[in-house]
Length: 424
Image (cartoon, rainbow, N blue to C red; front, top):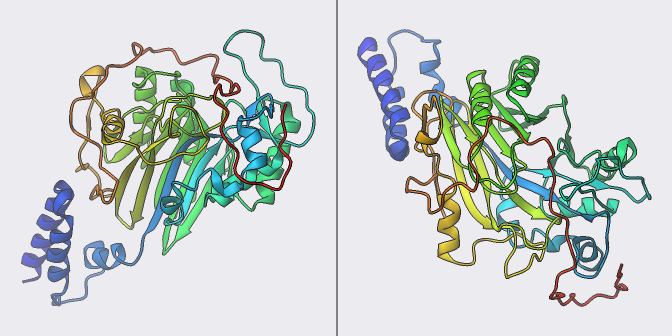
């Protein structure tokens, strides 16, 4: 009898992993099978896996680039820094607050210097693609007011104003009691018995992946999930370069469960590969560096359990209307929502050595399902509506940058305020 039940457990588990859409039904089968009493005590994982998996979960939310400042600290009317002085801190994330406040942790990339001092920008040379960004330390409140708990500081703008600007930024974030993700300082998040390690890294070449893999070996042994939150790649292309595909897949093969990227300022596909998930670029989210950036973005969520996870993709826009109002929101139209989803498709034929899928992975015990609800969606399986803007290249970008913010031609009307407006 024991052997028959054990065989049924194995077969049911295999079927569960390969059929994510029937997860709830198969969990009922497993629970029923596990209710049988074995003839002798069994200490193997098959005897306790169902109880462990249902004991609790942890929901994490990931956002793309959050540049909460203005080019060279400008405060002209209508710029991000002007809004930060004249609008409440809750303004910026208020249209997506319902999602960000309903998780355990929201993780964002702080891609700017926050300082109250007048600092000398570091030498980046000259050219049309060279920019510096900073805002007052009070801008750190925007994160906490928006229910963001974790801020990464690994990106190409953290040293725009040298070591002094970097240290001022850390101080501003710490003052708001934010958890800071810095290079070689992984953040450990725990909830309901689930432990996840997030490594905040730069990824500009295949060689960087080797360094990250070496650092992964130093993560706590009791970590249930390893997450790589990286900054890197070529800007303004909706498809990752071949070297970046290779590097991200290499990180999954080395033991990462999720590899989540940003920096291109546009969305790139989501790929399920060898039991892990790669989000090649989340795009921008709250972006003060440009008055008219590409709108399409997403909120990426994972709910982690012992031995399984589910994921939600929530289409969003960087702003509403014709000009950046520094306020991410849900899509204004169904066509905008669908176009965002189309950009997330990983078309295998574009890349060499592809072994990927846009459906639930069936290659690892670390993943059992992908789910969607409300305005969320799993990775779509239709044909993309647009072709890549550039040809994938083996060479990473050597001069990462952003387009600076300029004063909007249509100055937005400020909200009622008792404070005095500041114009640069």
